[in-house]
Length: 199
Image (cartoon, rainbow, N blue to C red; front, side):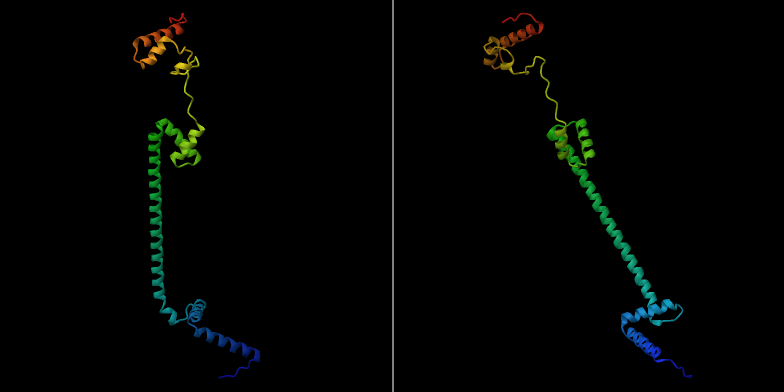
């Protein structure tokens, strides 16, 4: 073998490199990385340690992929089931809310439609909350009063003298006196026609 002369610095670098590679090859984790780096740099170089493990690694990778795909499909199925249950619960609560409004507040179909349009516009999903807000913003109309300005059954404030014989008789008979009733009807007709009262 021919002798080759090298300087001291190059010798020290070669020794250091050899010691480093030897140390890396002793550690199982770094050894594998070194062999993989060698295989990547020189793909045609046979490395039995890696070549023998290749089919096993491929099989493990396939099993991992199958497991990952299965896990993903199970998670998607569970998410779908949760979403379907949530939607079913919302629908059940929606129908219950509609029934409650019809029963408790006697809301008509037209009224229910108006309330639900209000709820959708304002992002409200509970009918009781929607009804409370809607009825606050849309109070019922005041009851109509007669043009004379008197209430329908308020006898004492309707301008009739409490001592009126027909009214007194009707009150005493608890509404059973035909005579008092006919007399009051006659008085009302006279007032409507503008004829003098028949008291």
